[in-house]
Length: 130
Image (cartoon, rainbow, N blue to C red):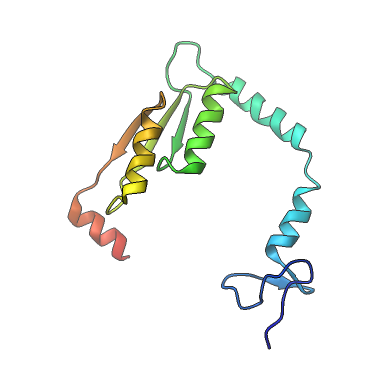
């Protein structure tokens, strides 16, 4: 029988969604996030940045990513707000989409260094299959 989350309209048929007491994962996580002391977490992040920030201009953090919204946001935040000098690293996809390639280009042209790893095509195909 089809049922829905008691707090939202998420159906129980959605893949990989766990319901507990009639409430979906997303709603439970939303409530959990309200219990986090975000100021303390940011202080912890700032302290980590201070601990690893280099004084000689060398890279002090490696950020893996594709240049999509998550890696772009994280690298921008660490560079601009926390004054880190990140090195971004990308494992090339089997095939870039037009949007993916444009995002990647914007990311590396935003003032970040990037190492793009493009593996042997045969090895890459084997890895993708597995």
